[in-house]
Length: 93
Image 1 (spheres, rainbow, N blue to C red):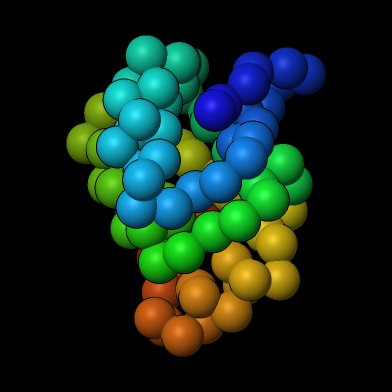
Image 2 (image 1 turned 60 degrees about the horizontal axis):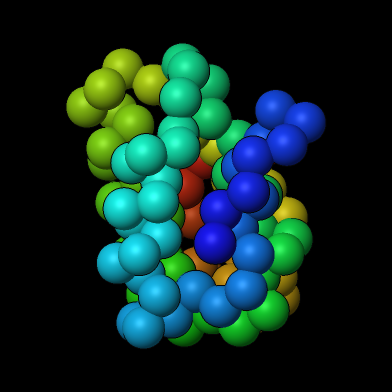
């Protein structure tokens, strides 16, 4: 689930293969404005689908002329991002 409050979109719950498609669709409906801040502090579980989701959001934002930034990665997300060597592709706040 994605919740918008205080100028940021907070991802809550699990970000796995089972939830990635729904999160992708939810973001298409919710993400507005030229600056998008996505906060991962509410993530309770994540797998490699989370990395794919962030890359898809980054690509989508770029095609729409928007800037997206990610914040508050969990330790498991940091590990996955490093494992796939995509740190430079994911703009952080």
